[in-house]
Image 1 (cartoon, rainbow, N blue to C red):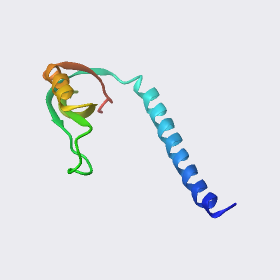
Image 2: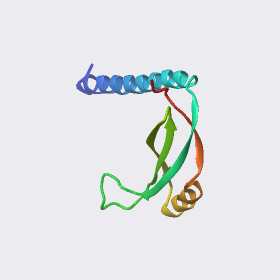
Image 3: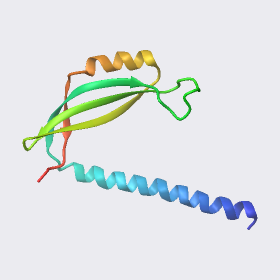
Image 4: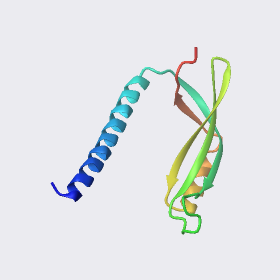
Length: 111
């Protein structure tokens, strides 16, 4: 075994382990969510942005940050989800019809 193999093998093993762990975790959470109740949520706000690691670089990926609200057991909650768009124009076109819409939301029972 040469030096490159000694360095790259543990890195590759760590990356593969991370991918497998993430997939298994997702699969377990997905199965658990099948039994969650469903409630209605309303999209309250949608902000289009392109923040990234390097502000000086050209904007390649735009994001729509959606804020939604829902009620469960008499308590009001707020959530956030993000969608990626290819450019600013498609982001604006996609965002506008979703504002104020209701969506079905799987929730965890709050005791």
